[in-house]
Length: 175
Image (cartoon, rainbow, N blue to C red; front, side, top):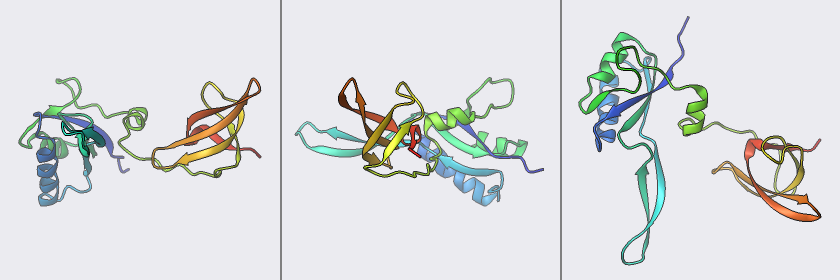
């Protein structure tokens, strides 16, 4: 029975996230631990900053400074490999016991793994809202942004057309 890899959060010295991630990748390669330690991520986001001169520039910023996400199967060997990376201070969780993996909900909420959403509607289609405060309403898709997992739907409420922002999986095509 093959155990499934889970996401764990590793605490690092501030500013050492990328160094810990690259050193861990090297360790995984050198010790052939690819089957145990499958993925290493330093979650980042791109932010537009305005400089003193008034210029806009795109900056890559860490979402969780001081933390690295590791998808792994927890064994003594994989724990030891991660724990002994220079700059790593340990796993997040109760210190006395073994590390606790993130739940599926936490992984989804933190946006660590991008889930592919099958979209069976397009701009101009009528959709039924299946989740959220407007559940049960029917609207027309006005705009879609698949990369950001958002759609804008025009819903008729109180005789007025009202634009509503939804996530892709909050609507489904009207049969």
